[in-house]
Image 1 (cartoon, rainbow, N blue to C red):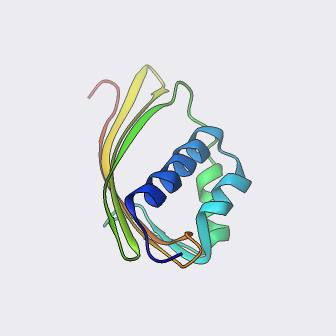
Image 2: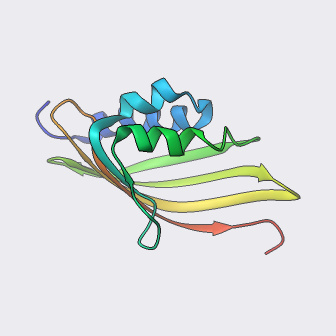
Image 3: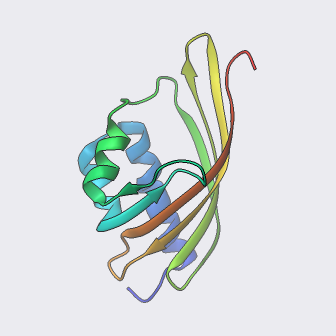
Length: 125
């Protein structure tokens, strides 16, 4: 692979959000390099390595009523940037997330560094 272009990044995002919906550990594993780092935002502890990423990803199970959409905004070199919106049922209502992903990739198209920033609207707030 010669860097990330918009089409390749859109394909990775399709697999990323499909893995979110399925919560299948094999689908999640295929997205990340072995030594990848997953940052959940500036104030949360990063997941270090694919094994920890997969473990943390699948531990809560798939969210009921999951709806999502995304838009790749830019891709060049080893980096892709996307906007996403996700919502799901939790407790007495719907949780909504709106955020940005910034992902770096290796030569095989696997994510090596994943950063996300999002705003969360929880039911009743």
